[in-house]
Length: 121
Image (cartoon, rainbow, N blue to C red; front, side, top):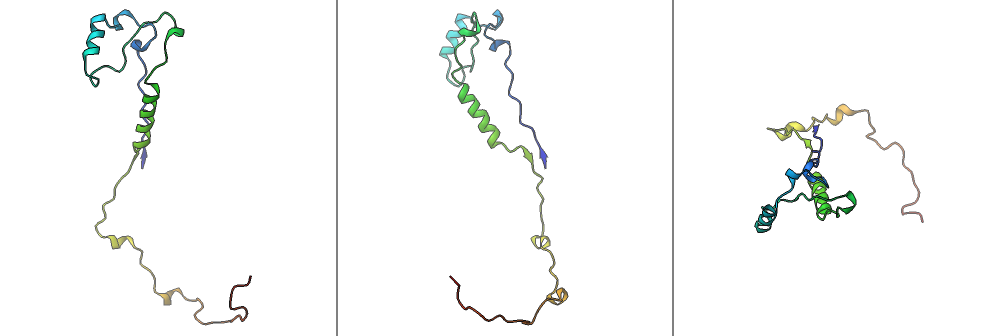
């Protein structure tokens, strides 16, 4: 069995900065075209410029994205399993020796204890 490490999350780029370069900021026409798109086709993140880090609002989809990543890591098996194809299942059972070969073991009652016949309370 070989352990497969979890994939690293994608690091944020320049467009995820609180003050991204001008070429990463969408124009007003691009923003309007995002609104007209279907929900599935819309980009998850639209870059926005802020003057300072204190003005950046909390990320609305943070908890959902973290949950989905944890769920993916939990449900994804990260161990490679080598499957063995067995032709004859009886070949897996060990051959048991005959009881005569396992002697000496007691086969007669050597001592008998007499006493209580029921549980003692």
